[in-house]
Length: 486
Image (cartoon, rainbow, N blue to C red; front, side, top):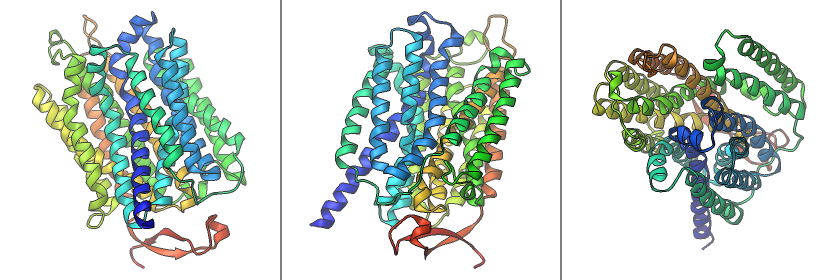
């Protein structure tokens, strides 16, 4: 009877984690197709309305690693409830926002919910049997990947039937119920890491990320060689270097740099950076390509809803590939799946670069791209979870998700600059801009494949470490990488 109840509680835990991560990921892209509608409704400029996306991205980049670390210290279940509650409150503020300033502030609050990613992976490792961890992480990763694109598909029908504010009302209700379910059904973490938060490191990291992402997001307006962009990038370099020094010297680092120096961790994070750049840029600009009026000499003149439907094959294959990834690991290692996913993405993007004249071509390449992303996201999460101690799962997976977010900001900004650099006389982008942009994404996918090939190959074995070193009960086991030659 006890076993039955335990299995049932794991199912409930997993459903709560899936709902939380899925809706946060969905809110990343849900607003993208309706920014012109928000701009008109709130009487603001195109430059200002883009901060609805930028504020969300900056906030998530800052709070993901910080709250992942806090969860490792005070309890992942408790911080999961806090993160989901913040996401729900942010949705409520956004739904009733009377001005663009309030809406941007609401998106900052929503960004706190980014901590659901590292907290969810940590809870899975704490609560699930070792044999099921890879499969569970794979499914959650698939939900995260698919959720990032579901917003593009759902935005059109929701706005057509209601209005854009329902893009916040609906998630508010679901996320609020999910927070209550997390409080009721998700058990508190048995694994804790005692210590303190290094607030100096937190401030330096936050300021450094703002200084980095702000000029990247504004470079197409200010100019890549303008004083503000170059000055902020230089400031970012100084602040992030100061953060690294503070982390190395701290007795309670926000990010354990010894862990981040592990070959399996830094190579996986590099792949995450490159993957984030290619995926988020494609999410942002493939619908824009489809919505381009045919008078431009290309594009399909699609509506928001029609452009979203062209993304549907990508979402389906992305989810299915992520679901089966964990089950494939018995035959194909996480590294092999990461390399294979990157190779599939490179092929898909290369095809899109040379063949985008018909809707079926775009839908086909989008579906192929989804296969690669689904495999890669699940394998990256598993590589991180498998190769760090349980006490560092939250912060390590949080940093991986955070690096993906930063990569998305960089990729989207660079491709935006390429596409809008030389518009036609009617103001529409030239087809050559999209072609070059898709080519750059192909290069990013190839670079991600090179990073994946650099991930060390090896098998895993169980070892028992000193409880004081791990911060776990005596006798607990840890998964550690072992060179294949041993």
